Image 1 (cartoon, rainbow, N blue to C red):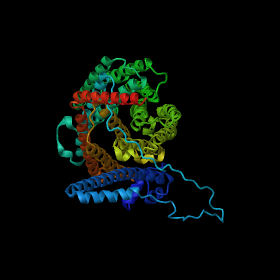
Image 2 (image 1 turned 45 degrees about the vertical axis):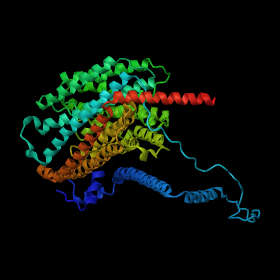
Image 3 (image 1 turned 120 degrees about the horizontal axis):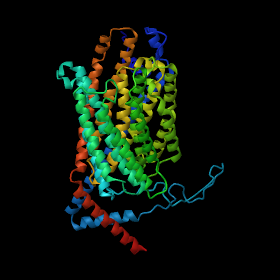
Amino acid sequence: MIYLRSKLHVLLFAVLVSVNVTGFAANEEEIDSWLHGAGVIGTIALVLMILALGVIIALARFNSYIKGYKQKKIEKNNLQFNEDILSMDSDQIDQILEQRKASLNYKLSGEELCGKEAPTDKRGLIYEITHDPKPTFVAKKQRRSKVFLRTDPELKKIVIAFISASAFWLIFGTVVGEFAALKFIWPELDHVSWLSFSRLRPVHTNTVFWGWGSFAMIGLAYFVMAWTSNTKLHSYKMAWTSFILFNLNIIFGNLALLMGVNNGGGEFREYIWPIFVPFFIVPLVMTFINFYQTVAHRKVREIYISNWFIFASIIWTAVVAVTAYLPINGLGETAIAGYFMHMGVGMWFMTFTLGLIYYYLPASLNKPIYSYALGVVALWTQMLFYTMIGTHHFIFSPLPWWLQTIAIIFSVGMIIPVTAGTVNYLMTMRGKWSHLAKSYVMPFFLVGVCFYWIGSMQGSLQATRYTNYVWHFTDFNVAHSHITMYGIISFVLWACMYYIMPKLTGKEPKQFLVGGHFWLAFVGMFAYTLPLMIGGTMRGLSWLQGAPFMESVVLMRSHWIWRAVGGSMMLLSHFVFGYNIYYMVKGYKAHASEAAEQSSATELTEELLETETI
């Protein structure tokens, strides 16, 4: 068993590890040499970027609080001044007014610094003298505090229903995940068969995948499809049918898993096929038809880039879902496992969520996307490279060597779509960084976009044979999956929800609660992932040394404690998020009607004023 010299060494190992694949043992000299690899430096930079991102957001919010405090202090001084004025007699007030009038009438002559003589330039340094009356900085216009989005009431209902259900499944799935994580610390926590880890773990993953992520994505996409097509949703009846059947699918699927009825070792596809078939029919077939017909009857010429991403995601996932449940055994089953495991994440969740960013990010900033061309490049390169990377989960397995090599090459090729998308999003944010201090929608988007690049780059590095040799089948993979599914997907979905829900309901959650949700989730994710990256690396190195397996289990105990701590913070943030959704949804119909009336009255007043001006 390897004892590392310092915590710094441990962190470095967790970043990138190069291993001698010619043998199954590594000595201490070889391990020390890994620290000098170029990949180590690159991954350290990725980790530091994440930490720097949190510091930047914290400083922006702190600066906002300082400005707010100063403004309150000024208002307090003004109020005190008013009280002092009221306590004065008329002679004192007249004297103050005369002094104020004299100060306002005072003007500079313009000769205070240069005198009355004309300027001379004996050395030829001055090339232009101007007297520009315009100020260098123009005060920004105040943005309207609340804008109630007037749209089809039925569309609002379906979007709110999907988002509310997603919040419920997120809390339920995280409670199950937290309970399963506690079992690593207290194995004797219970002795009930249907609460064993082997049953709770697939309940956790399938619930947050299909219940939280899929519900949220589809609900947000209903609005995007109708709004960007400038038309009504094709069929609300079909949307509500899919909503009901989708919920029943998750309920029956989880009950089957708790009873021990599952699809064997198929990760993320533990639902047996009689239960998974409704999942295939509901979000894939019915939703695709609904979306397609909506776009087909659009009232605008162009098909917005978001819709291309969403359609591509659904079509590819249909292919993946059918392939995953084909009766294939042996090595073919292993290849399909890796294929579905990664394609389910990349083509369903990632591609779908990227499409949502292309609408909700520009809309929240009130500006167009930076480059449509970059979006097209990101779309087609995503379709090209992501389709062949699943096998990198089984490097050094009995699968053909050429198939493993192709997976590694395509994993590295993912740098192209990831970089194109990240540049497009960040350039869209350019000039709007002040929004970091105004609301938490921008911080949620910024974290999601930055994790999209950092997590994807780390995944490409991990796909290489040397790093895969140490990290795979360890807790490092658990950390990586949470960096991507939580740091990217969840943060982006939260950003979209916090933007659109106040516009649909007319009610905005309290900013300090949204901030509590953000920081608990952000810090909790660090407390969850970093210890698992460190412990997973140490565990892999322990295996390479040929140490008994139980030693690696004991080695992970302290890291599992930190995972439970981070998971508890994440769970608490989800409860705050659930309350925020409940606050916006509760009584939104009455509030929406009132807000719509006020909005109509305001617009009518503005029209009358414009008419009088003309």
